[in-house]
Image 1: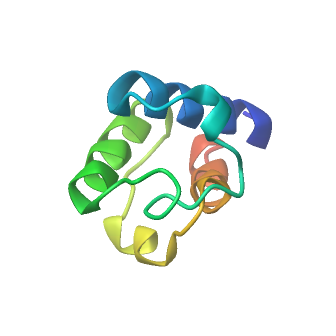
Image 2: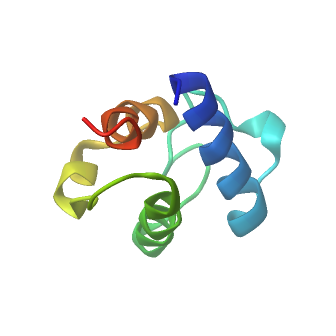
Image 3: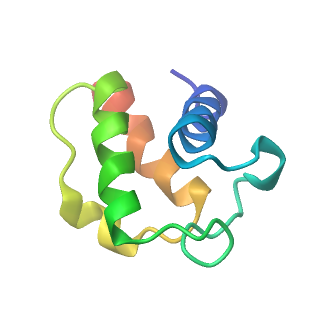
Length: 82
């Protein structure tokens, strides 16, 4: 799975689950400031991301996540079995 495909999946989740506008979701969008997500939303996002990655997602790695691109970069190796 490419990083572009992962970004598209994340964007689709944010649109369908959090009622955000697709046009507002860019790689540089800050999850908390720009997209107005809170810590509960972040957990919900992790749960949804588990549907297309192999193995477990350690919530600890999300502590440093600030942007949508950060999420893509963390999910990329997990989605590709690395």
